[in-house]
Length: 535
Image (cartoon, rainbow, N blue to C red; front, side):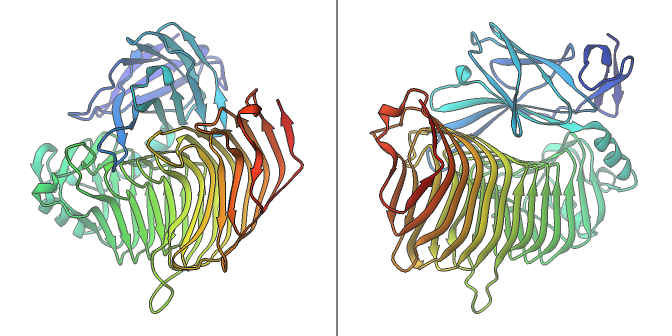
Protein backbone atom coordinates (compact mmCIF):
# COMPACT_ATOMS: atom_id res chain seq x y z
CA UNK A 1 0.00 0.00 0.00
CA UNK A 2 1.30 3.49 -0.87
CA UNK A 3 1.03 6.11 1.86
CA UNK A 4 2.31 9.70 1.73
CA UNK A 5 1.83 12.43 4.31
CA UNK A 6 1.58 15.96 2.91
CA UNK A 7 1.15 19.25 4.71
CA UNK A 8 -1.33 21.82 3.43
CA UNK A 9 -1.28 24.84 5.75
CA UNK A 10 -1.65 23.22 9.17
CA UNK A 11 -3.62 20.25 7.89
CA UNK A 12 -2.01 16.88 7.30
CA UNK A 13 -3.17 15.15 4.12
CA UNK A 14 -2.71 11.38 3.95
CA UNK A 15 -2.72 9.62 0.58
CA UNK A 16 -3.89 6.01 0.70
CA UNK A 17 -3.66 3.52 -2.16
CA UNK A 18 -7.04 2.08 -3.11
CA UNK A 19 -5.66 -1.48 -3.06
CA UNK A 20 -6.30 -1.59 0.68
CA UNK A 21 -9.77 -0.10 0.32
CA UNK A 22 -11.64 -2.23 -2.20
CA UNK A 23 -15.12 -0.86 -1.53
CA UNK A 24 -16.08 1.55 -4.30
CA UNK A 25 -12.48 2.04 -5.40
CA UNK A 26 -10.54 1.75 -8.63
CA UNK A 27 -7.38 -0.34 -8.81
CA UNK A 28 -4.32 1.87 -8.54
CA UNK A 29 -6.12 5.08 -7.59
CA UNK A 30 -5.42 6.94 -4.37
CA UNK A 31 -7.67 8.06 -1.59
CA UNK A 32 -6.95 11.17 0.45
CA UNK A 33 -7.59 11.93 4.10
CA UNK A 34 -7.09 15.34 5.69
CA UNK A 35 -6.43 15.59 9.42
CA UNK A 36 -7.50 18.97 10.75
CA UNK A 37 -5.18 21.17 12.83
CA UNK A 38 -5.37 20.36 16.55
CA UNK A 39 -7.15 22.86 18.79
CA UNK A 40 -4.88 24.21 21.54
CA UNK A 41 -6.04 23.10 24.95
CA UNK A 42 -8.58 20.57 23.66
CA UNK A 43 -9.03 17.55 25.93
CA UNK A 44 -7.94 14.24 24.48
CA UNK A 45 -10.19 11.24 24.93
CA UNK A 46 -9.34 9.13 27.95
CA UNK A 47 -8.94 5.33 27.81
CA UNK A 48 -8.98 5.25 24.02
CA UNK A 49 -6.62 5.62 21.04
CA UNK A 50 -7.34 5.55 17.31
CA UNK A 51 -5.32 4.76 14.21
CA UNK A 52 -6.42 5.92 10.78
CA UNK A 53 -4.61 4.11 7.97
CA UNK A 54 -1.65 3.52 10.23
CA UNK A 55 -1.38 7.06 11.61
CA UNK A 56 -2.57 8.31 14.99
CA UNK A 57 -5.96 9.99 14.82
CA UNK A 58 -6.74 12.55 17.54
CA UNK A 59 -9.87 11.87 19.58
CA UNK A 60 -11.42 14.73 21.55
CA UNK A 61 -13.19 14.05 24.81
CA UNK A 62 -16.63 15.60 25.16
CA UNK A 63 -19.28 15.27 27.85
CA UNK A 64 -22.86 16.46 27.74
CA UNK A 65 -24.41 16.71 31.17
CA UNK A 66 -28.06 17.00 31.99
CA UNK A 67 -28.20 20.68 32.90
CA UNK A 68 -30.50 20.37 35.93
CA UNK A 69 -28.95 17.31 37.50
CA UNK A 70 -25.88 18.74 39.18
CA UNK A 71 -23.80 16.56 36.88
CA UNK A 72 -25.16 13.27 38.14
CA UNK A 73 -25.49 11.65 34.73
CA UNK A 74 -24.10 12.42 31.32
CA UNK A 75 -23.25 11.32 27.80
CA UNK A 76 -19.54 10.76 27.19
CA UNK A 77 -18.16 11.03 23.67
CA UNK A 78 -14.83 10.45 21.97
CA UNK A 79 -14.97 12.51 18.79
CA UNK A 80 -12.86 12.34 15.63
CA UNK A 81 -13.36 14.80 12.79
CA UNK A 82 -11.44 14.69 9.53
CA UNK A 83 -12.05 14.82 5.78
CA UNK A 84 -11.81 12.02 3.23
CA UNK A 85 -12.75 11.40 -0.37
CA UNK A 86 -13.47 7.69 -0.02
CA UNK A 87 -13.61 4.73 2.39
CA UNK A 88 -11.14 4.58 5.26
CA UNK A 89 -10.03 1.91 7.70
CA UNK A 90 -9.57 2.51 11.38
CA UNK A 91 -8.55 0.69 14.53
CA UNK A 92 -9.53 1.68 18.05
CA UNK A 93 -7.84 0.41 21.19
CA UNK A 94 -8.76 0.79 24.84
CA UNK A 95 -6.80 0.31 28.03
CA UNK A 96 -9.98 -0.54 29.94
CA UNK A 97 -10.17 -4.22 29.08
CA UNK A 98 -12.41 -5.55 26.33
CA UNK A 99 -14.94 -3.78 24.14
CA UNK A 100 -17.78 -6.19 24.68
CA UNK A 101 -20.27 -5.87 21.81
CA UNK A 102 -20.08 -2.36 20.37
CA UNK A 103 -22.60 -1.28 17.73
CA UNK A 104 -21.39 0.76 14.74
CA UNK A 105 -24.05 2.72 12.88
CA UNK A 106 -24.56 5.37 10.28
CA UNK A 107 -27.90 7.00 9.54
CA UNK A 108 -30.43 4.30 8.75
CA UNK A 109 -28.21 1.22 8.91
CA UNK A 110 -25.81 -0.83 11.00
CA UNK A 111 -22.22 -1.43 9.92
CA UNK A 112 -19.71 -4.15 10.73
CA UNK A 113 -17.11 -3.77 13.47
CA UNK A 114 -14.59 -6.52 14.22
CA UNK A 115 -13.68 -6.89 17.88
CA UNK A 116 -10.52 -8.58 19.09
CA UNK A 117 -10.02 -8.17 22.83
CA UNK A 118 -9.13 -4.56 23.54
CA UNK A 119 -9.20 -3.56 19.86
CA UNK A 120 -11.94 -2.98 17.33
CA UNK A 121 -11.40 -2.64 13.57
CA UNK A 122 -13.83 -0.94 11.26
CA UNK A 123 -14.16 0.50 7.79
CA UNK A 124 -16.14 3.67 7.21
CA UNK A 125 -17.70 3.80 3.72
CA UNK A 126 -16.67 7.41 3.09
CA UNK A 127 -17.86 10.90 3.99
CA UNK A 128 -20.69 10.81 6.50
CA UNK A 129 -21.51 10.66 10.19
CA UNK A 130 -20.98 7.51 12.24
CA UNK A 131 -21.39 6.51 15.86
CA UNK A 132 -19.99 3.50 17.69
CA UNK A 133 -21.79 2.74 20.93
CA UNK A 134 -19.68 0.91 23.49
CA UNK A 135 -21.68 0.14 26.65
CA UNK A 136 -18.79 -1.87 28.10
CA UNK A 137 -16.71 1.32 28.34
CA UNK A 138 -19.38 3.47 29.96
CA UNK A 139 -18.76 4.91 33.40
CA UNK A 140 -21.49 4.83 36.08
CA UNK A 141 -24.48 7.07 35.24
CA UNK A 142 -23.26 7.62 31.70
CA UNK A 143 -23.04 6.19 28.21
CA UNK A 144 -19.98 6.00 25.96
CA UNK A 145 -20.04 6.63 22.22
CA UNK A 146 -17.26 7.13 19.68
CA UNK A 147 -18.30 9.62 17.00
CA UNK A 148 -16.75 9.97 13.55
CA UNK A 149 -17.55 13.07 11.52
CA UNK A 150 -16.03 12.48 8.10
CA UNK A 151 -16.32 15.54 5.91
CA UNK A 152 -16.26 15.32 2.13
CA UNK A 153 -12.70 16.33 1.29
CA UNK A 154 -13.60 17.62 -2.15
CA UNK A 155 -16.28 19.88 -0.70
CA UNK A 156 -13.86 21.10 2.00
CA UNK A 157 -11.31 21.99 -0.67
CA UNK A 158 -13.90 23.78 -2.78
CA UNK A 159 -15.09 25.83 0.17
CA UNK A 160 -11.53 26.68 1.18
CA UNK A 161 -10.82 27.88 -2.37
CA UNK A 162 -13.97 30.03 -2.37
CA UNK A 163 -12.79 31.87 0.73
CA UNK A 164 -9.22 32.57 -0.41
CA UNK A 165 -10.37 36.03 -1.38
CA UNK A 166 -12.37 36.61 1.82
CA UNK A 167 -11.27 39.04 4.51
CA UNK A 168 -8.80 37.21 6.78
CA UNK A 169 -9.56 38.12 10.39
CA UNK A 170 -5.91 37.75 11.38
CA UNK A 171 -4.96 40.48 8.89
CA UNK A 172 -7.49 42.86 10.42
CA UNK A 173 -6.14 42.98 13.95
CA UNK A 174 -7.69 39.77 15.32
CA UNK A 175 -5.19 37.49 17.05
CA UNK A 176 -5.23 33.78 17.71
CA UNK A 177 -4.81 33.79 21.48
CA UNK A 178 -6.74 31.50 23.86
CA UNK A 179 -6.32 34.04 26.70
CA UNK A 180 -7.09 37.36 24.98
CA UNK A 181 -10.56 38.94 24.96
CA UNK A 182 -10.98 40.27 21.43
CA UNK A 183 -14.66 41.20 21.48
CA UNK A 184 -14.13 44.75 20.21
CA UNK A 185 -11.78 43.80 17.37
CA UNK A 186 -13.96 40.95 16.18
CA UNK A 187 -17.16 43.00 16.38
CA UNK A 188 -15.59 45.82 14.35
CA UNK A 189 -14.76 43.28 11.69
CA UNK A 190 -18.23 41.74 11.71
CA UNK A 191 -19.84 45.17 11.46
CA UNK A 192 -18.29 45.52 8.01
CA UNK A 193 -20.22 42.53 6.72
CA UNK A 194 -19.18 40.69 3.60
CA UNK A 195 -17.12 37.49 3.49
CA UNK A 196 -14.96 36.96 6.58
CA UNK A 197 -12.58 34.07 7.23
CA UNK A 198 -11.17 32.88 10.56
CA UNK A 199 -8.19 30.56 9.89
CA UNK A 200 -7.11 27.85 12.32
CA UNK A 201 -6.63 29.23 15.83
CA UNK A 202 -8.53 30.19 18.98
CA UNK A 203 -10.32 33.55 19.08
CA UNK A 204 -12.02 34.61 22.32
CA UNK A 205 -14.89 37.06 22.51
CA UNK A 206 -18.02 38.00 24.42
CA UNK A 207 -21.42 38.34 22.81
CA UNK A 208 -21.22 39.19 19.11
CA UNK A 209 -23.78 40.19 16.49
CA UNK A 210 -23.93 39.56 12.76
CA UNK A 211 -25.46 42.06 10.35
CA UNK A 212 -27.18 41.45 7.01
CA UNK A 213 -25.18 40.17 4.03
CA UNK A 214 -22.46 38.53 6.11
CA UNK A 215 -20.78 35.19 5.45
CA UNK A 216 -18.65 33.95 8.34
CA UNK A 217 -16.30 31.09 7.45
CA UNK A 218 -14.56 29.13 10.21
CA UNK A 219 -11.78 27.09 8.67
CA UNK A 220 -10.88 23.63 10.00
CA UNK A 221 -9.15 24.15 13.35
CA UNK A 222 -10.69 27.61 13.91
CA UNK A 223 -12.46 28.10 17.25
CA UNK A 224 -14.50 31.17 18.10
CA UNK A 225 -14.73 30.78 21.87
CA UNK A 226 -16.87 32.66 24.36
CA UNK A 227 -15.20 34.41 27.27
CA UNK A 228 -16.09 33.52 30.84
CA UNK A 229 -19.54 34.54 32.01
CA UNK A 230 -18.18 36.65 34.84
CA UNK A 231 -16.31 38.72 32.27
CA UNK A 232 -19.51 39.97 30.67
CA UNK A 233 -20.85 37.32 28.30
CA UNK A 234 -24.56 37.86 27.70
CA UNK A 235 -27.36 35.38 27.15
CA UNK A 236 -26.22 34.63 23.61
CA UNK A 237 -22.85 34.14 22.00
CA UNK A 238 -23.90 35.09 18.47
CA UNK A 239 -26.95 37.30 17.88
CA UNK A 240 -28.57 37.64 14.47
CA UNK A 241 -31.39 40.17 14.78
CA UNK A 242 -33.42 41.84 12.05
CA UNK A 243 -30.91 40.61 9.49
CA UNK A 244 -31.06 39.01 6.08
CA UNK A 245 -28.74 36.78 4.09
CA UNK A 246 -26.42 35.61 6.85
CA UNK A 247 -24.32 32.44 6.61
CA UNK A 248 -22.07 30.73 9.16
CA UNK A 249 -20.11 27.89 7.60
CA UNK A 250 -16.94 25.82 7.67
CA UNK A 251 -15.53 22.96 9.71
CA UNK A 252 -14.55 25.20 12.63
CA UNK A 253 -16.17 25.54 16.03
CA UNK A 254 -18.36 27.96 17.93
CA UNK A 255 -17.59 27.21 21.59
CA UNK A 256 -20.05 28.81 24.03
CA UNK A 257 -17.73 27.70 26.84
CA UNK A 258 -20.52 27.39 29.41
CA UNK A 259 -21.07 23.65 29.89
CA UNK A 260 -18.96 22.74 32.88
CA UNK A 261 -20.14 21.65 36.27
CA UNK A 262 -18.71 24.82 37.78
CA UNK A 263 -20.21 27.27 35.30
CA UNK A 264 -23.95 27.38 34.79
CA UNK A 265 -24.33 30.59 32.81
CA UNK A 266 -27.16 30.13 30.28
CA UNK A 267 -25.81 30.95 26.84
CA UNK A 268 -27.34 30.36 23.40
CA UNK A 269 -24.90 29.65 20.60
CA UNK A 270 -27.10 31.39 18.04
CA UNK A 271 -30.06 33.60 18.85
CA UNK A 272 -31.80 34.34 15.56
CA UNK A 273 -34.59 36.91 15.89
CA UNK A 274 -36.86 38.53 13.29
CA UNK A 275 -34.46 37.54 10.52
CA UNK A 276 -34.68 35.96 7.10
CA UNK A 277 -32.48 33.68 4.99
CA UNK A 278 -30.02 32.55 7.67
CA UNK A 279 -27.90 29.49 6.92
CA UNK A 280 -25.66 27.48 9.23
CA UNK A 281 -23.54 24.79 7.58
CA UNK A 282 -20.95 22.24 8.75
CA UNK A 283 -19.85 24.05 11.92
CA UNK A 284 -19.63 22.49 15.37
CA UNK A 285 -21.56 24.26 18.13
CA UNK A 286 -20.39 23.08 21.54
CA UNK A 287 -20.83 23.73 25.23
CA UNK A 288 -23.93 25.91 25.36
CA UNK A 289 -26.03 25.76 28.48
CA UNK A 290 -29.18 27.11 26.89
CA UNK A 291 -30.96 26.34 23.64
CA UNK A 292 -28.07 26.09 21.21
CA UNK A 293 -29.92 27.46 18.18
CA UNK A 294 -33.03 29.52 18.92
CA UNK A 295 -34.86 30.49 15.72
CA UNK A 296 -37.40 33.10 16.83
CA UNK A 297 -39.89 34.87 14.59
CA UNK A 298 -37.69 34.20 11.58
CA UNK A 299 -38.22 32.78 8.10
CA UNK A 300 -36.16 30.62 5.78
CA UNK A 301 -33.60 29.27 8.22
CA UNK A 302 -31.53 26.32 7.07
CA UNK A 303 -29.02 24.16 8.92
CA UNK A 304 -26.98 21.61 6.97
CA UNK A 305 -24.56 19.10 8.51
CA UNK A 306 -24.30 21.10 11.72
CA UNK A 307 -22.95 19.34 14.82
CA UNK A 308 -24.34 20.38 18.20
CA UNK A 309 -23.21 19.44 21.72
CA UNK A 310 -25.54 21.30 24.07
CA UNK A 311 -26.30 21.15 27.77
CA UNK A 312 -29.90 22.03 26.97
CA UNK A 313 -31.76 22.01 23.64
CA UNK A 314 -30.27 21.60 20.19
CA UNK A 315 -32.56 23.42 17.73
CA UNK A 316 -35.70 25.36 18.73
CA UNK A 317 -37.76 26.77 15.82
CA UNK A 318 -40.13 29.19 17.55
CA UNK A 319 -42.86 31.14 15.71
CA UNK A 320 -40.76 30.65 12.58
CA UNK A 321 -41.58 29.49 9.07
CA UNK A 322 -39.83 27.56 6.32
CA UNK A 323 -37.20 26.00 8.53
CA UNK A 324 -35.03 23.08 7.34
CA UNK A 325 -32.69 21.17 9.65
CA UNK A 326 -30.85 18.60 7.55
CA UNK A 327 -28.02 16.22 8.34
CA UNK A 328 -27.54 17.52 11.87
CA UNK A 329 -25.76 15.53 14.59
CA UNK A 330 -27.12 16.64 17.96
CA UNK A 331 -26.23 15.50 21.47
CA UNK A 332 -28.24 17.42 24.04
CA UNK A 333 -28.79 17.47 27.78
CA UNK A 334 -32.38 18.53 27.13
CA UNK A 335 -34.50 18.34 23.97
CA UNK A 336 -32.61 17.65 20.73
CA UNK A 337 -35.25 19.27 18.49
CA UNK A 338 -38.16 21.21 20.04
CA UNK A 339 -40.57 22.91 17.66
CA UNK A 340 -42.67 25.44 19.50
CA UNK A 341 -44.60 28.68 19.39
CA UNK A 342 -44.32 30.94 22.41
CA UNK A 343 -46.22 33.86 20.85
CA UNK A 344 -50.05 34.07 20.75
CA UNK A 345 -51.51 34.93 17.36
CA UNK A 346 -52.94 38.20 18.65
CA UNK A 347 -51.97 40.99 18.74
CA UNK A 348 -48.56 40.43 17.12
CA UNK A 349 -47.98 36.71 17.15
CA UNK A 350 -46.92 34.41 14.33
CA UNK A 351 -47.40 30.85 13.21
CA UNK A 352 -44.78 28.11 13.22
CA UNK A 353 -45.12 26.54 9.79
CA UNK A 354 -43.36 24.35 7.28
CA UNK A 355 -40.61 22.94 9.45
CA UNK A 356 -38.71 19.88 8.26
CA UNK A 357 -36.12 17.85 10.18
CA UNK A 358 -34.50 15.19 8.04
CA UNK A 359 -31.44 12.95 7.82
CA UNK A 360 -30.37 13.73 11.40
CA UNK A 361 -28.67 11.69 14.13
CA UNK A 362 -29.83 12.72 17.59
CA UNK A 363 -29.07 11.85 21.19
CA UNK A 364 -31.03 13.41 24.01
CA UNK A 365 -31.31 13.20 27.76
CA UNK A 366 -34.87 14.50 27.34
CA UNK A 367 -37.04 14.51 24.18
CA UNK A 368 -35.49 13.81 20.78
CA UNK A 369 -38.17 14.69 18.18
CA UNK A 370 -40.57 17.07 19.88
CA UNK A 371 -43.39 19.49 19.24
CA UNK A 372 -44.08 21.69 22.27
CA UNK A 373 -44.13 22.30 25.14
CA UNK A 374 -44.84 25.99 24.43
CA UNK A 375 -47.85 26.04 22.08
CA UNK A 376 -49.36 29.53 22.41
CA UNK A 377 -49.65 30.04 18.64
CA UNK A 378 -50.45 27.72 15.71
CA UNK A 379 -47.97 25.03 14.65
CA UNK A 380 -48.59 23.54 11.22
CA UNK A 381 -46.95 21.29 8.65
CA UNK A 382 -44.09 19.81 10.64
CA UNK A 383 -42.15 16.81 9.41
CA UNK A 384 -39.49 14.63 11.04
CA UNK A 385 -38.04 12.29 8.40
CA UNK A 386 -35.29 9.68 8.20
CA UNK A 387 -33.56 10.15 11.55
CA UNK A 388 -31.71 7.99 14.08
CA UNK A 389 -32.04 8.53 17.82
CA UNK A 390 -29.57 6.86 20.19
CA UNK A 391 -29.51 6.78 24.00
CA UNK A 392 -32.91 8.45 23.84
CA UNK A 393 -34.87 9.31 26.98
CA UNK A 394 -38.09 10.13 25.08
CA UNK A 395 -38.45 9.64 21.34
CA UNK A 396 -41.48 11.05 19.50
CA UNK A 397 -43.10 13.71 21.65
CA UNK A 398 -46.03 16.11 21.35
CA UNK A 399 -46.95 18.29 24.34
CA UNK A 400 -49.94 20.54 23.60
CA UNK A 401 -50.75 22.82 26.52
CA UNK A 402 -51.25 26.49 25.63
CA UNK A 403 -54.04 26.88 23.06
CA UNK A 404 -52.33 27.14 19.67
CA UNK A 405 -53.62 24.38 17.35
CA UNK A 406 -51.18 21.73 16.11
CA UNK A 407 -52.02 20.50 12.62
CA UNK A 408 -50.46 18.18 10.07
CA UNK A 409 -47.45 16.80 11.89
CA UNK A 410 -45.67 13.65 10.80
CA UNK A 411 -42.83 11.46 11.99
CA UNK A 412 -41.64 8.87 9.47
CA UNK A 413 -38.75 6.52 8.66
CA UNK A 414 -37.10 6.62 12.07
CA UNK A 415 -34.88 4.34 14.14
CA UNK A 416 -35.00 4.82 17.90
CA UNK A 417 -32.53 3.28 20.34
CA UNK A 418 -34.01 4.11 23.72
CA UNK A 419 -32.35 4.06 27.12
CA UNK A 420 -33.55 4.05 30.69
CA UNK A 421 -32.07 7.14 32.28
CA UNK A 422 -33.17 6.32 35.84
CA UNK A 423 -33.48 9.93 36.98
CA UNK A 424 -36.26 10.59 34.44
CA UNK A 425 -39.87 9.54 35.01
CA UNK A 426 -40.73 9.01 31.33
CA UNK A 427 -37.36 7.52 30.45
CA UNK A 428 -37.42 5.04 27.58
CA UNK A 429 -40.79 6.18 26.23
CA UNK A 430 -40.94 5.86 22.44
CA UNK A 431 -44.22 7.78 21.90
CA UNK A 432 -45.51 10.42 24.30
CA UNK A 433 -48.37 12.47 22.86
CA UNK A 434 -50.10 14.47 25.54
CA UNK A 435 -52.75 17.19 25.60
CA UNK A 436 -53.33 18.96 28.90
CA UNK A 437 -54.54 22.40 29.74
CA UNK A 438 -51.94 24.83 31.04
CA UNK A 439 -52.96 28.17 29.49
CA UNK A 440 -55.74 27.02 27.13
CA UNK A 441 -57.15 23.96 25.38
CA UNK A 442 -55.00 22.95 22.42
CA UNK A 443 -56.57 21.09 19.48
CA UNK A 444 -54.41 18.52 17.70
CA UNK A 445 -55.30 17.36 14.18
CA UNK A 446 -53.84 15.06 11.52
CA UNK A 447 -50.75 13.53 13.08
CA UNK A 448 -49.06 10.56 11.42
CA UNK A 449 -46.32 8.30 12.71
CA UNK A 450 -45.08 5.65 10.28
CA UNK A 451 -42.18 3.35 9.50
CA UNK A 452 -40.59 3.42 12.95
CA UNK A 453 -38.42 0.76 14.61
CA UNK A 454 -37.62 1.00 18.31
CA UNK A 455 -36.61 -1.00 21.33
CA UNK A 456 -39.38 -0.98 23.94
CA UNK A 457 -38.66 -0.73 27.64
CA UNK A 458 -41.43 1.61 28.87
CA UNK A 459 -45.08 2.18 28.02
CA UNK A 460 -45.84 4.67 25.25
CA UNK A 461 -48.53 7.14 26.33
CA UNK A 462 -51.39 9.04 24.71
CA UNK A 463 -53.61 11.50 26.57
CA UNK A 464 -56.36 13.99 25.74
CA UNK A 465 -58.79 16.11 27.74
CA UNK A 466 -62.47 17.13 27.39
CA UNK A 467 -62.72 19.85 24.79
CA UNK A 468 -59.36 18.90 23.30
CA UNK A 469 -59.28 15.17 22.59
CA UNK A 470 -56.19 13.58 21.10
CA UNK A 471 -57.73 12.50 17.82
CA UNK A 472 -56.78 11.98 14.21
CA UNK A 473 -53.50 10.32 15.21
CA UNK A 474 -52.46 7.33 13.12
CA UNK A 475 -49.59 4.89 13.58
CA UNK A 476 -48.49 2.71 10.68
CA UNK A 477 -45.72 0.13 10.28
CA UNK A 478 -44.31 0.29 13.78
CA UNK A 479 -41.78 -2.41 14.79
CA UNK A 480 -41.21 -3.02 18.51
CA UNK A 481 -38.22 -4.88 19.89
CA UNK A 482 -39.56 -5.57 23.38
CA UNK A 483 -37.24 -5.63 26.38
CA UNK A 484 -38.14 -6.26 30.02
CA UNK A 485 -40.03 -3.20 31.31
CA UNK A 486 -37.95 -0.82 33.37
CA UNK A 487 -40.48 -1.10 36.21
CA UNK A 488 -43.77 -2.79 37.05
CA UNK A 489 -45.94 -4.77 34.66
CA UNK A 490 -47.29 -2.19 32.19
CA UNK A 491 -48.95 -2.53 28.80
CA UNK A 492 -46.99 -1.51 25.72
CA UNK A 493 -49.39 1.42 25.17
CA UNK A 494 -51.33 3.40 27.73
CA UNK A 495 -54.13 5.88 27.05
CA UNK A 496 -55.70 8.42 29.37
CA UNK A 497 -58.71 10.69 28.92
CA UNK A 498 -60.17 11.35 25.49
CA UNK A 499 -58.04 9.59 22.91
CA UNK A 500 -58.64 8.41 19.36
CA UNK A 501 -55.50 6.78 17.99
CA UNK A 502 -55.28 4.01 15.38
CA UNK A 503 -52.34 1.66 14.80
CA UNK A 504 -52.00 -0.53 11.71
CA UNK A 505 -49.15 -2.80 10.75
CA UNK A 506 -47.83 -3.22 14.28
CA UNK A 507 -45.00 -5.77 14.55
CA UNK A 508 -44.12 -6.89 18.08
CA UNK A 509 -41.01 -8.95 18.74
CA UNK A 510 -41.49 -9.98 22.36
CA UNK A 511 -38.06 -11.66 22.50
CA UNK A 512 -39.25 -13.90 25.32
CA UNK A 513 -40.50 -10.97 27.43
CA UNK A 514 -44.24 -11.19 26.80
CA UNK A 515 -45.09 -12.45 30.29
CA UNK A 516 -43.36 -9.41 31.80
CA UNK A 517 -45.87 -7.07 30.17
CA UNK A 518 -49.60 -6.81 30.90
CA UNK A 519 -50.57 -6.73 27.22
CA UNK A 520 -50.57 -4.49 24.19
CA UNK A 521 -52.86 -1.66 25.31
CA UNK A 522 -54.61 -0.39 28.42
CA UNK A 523 -57.43 2.15 28.49
CA UNK A 524 -59.78 3.11 25.69
CA UNK A 525 -59.03 5.03 22.55
CA UNK A 526 -56.30 2.97 20.86
CA UNK A 527 -57.45 0.76 17.97
CA UNK A 528 -54.85 -1.78 16.81
CA UNK A 529 -55.22 -3.60 13.48
CA UNK A 530 -52.82 -5.86 11.59
CA UNK A 531 -50.77 -6.72 14.65
CA UNK A 532 -48.08 -9.36 14.15
CA UNK A 533 -46.48 -10.89 17.22
CA UNK A 534 -43.32 -12.95 17.58
CA UNK A 535 -42.51 -14.60 20.89
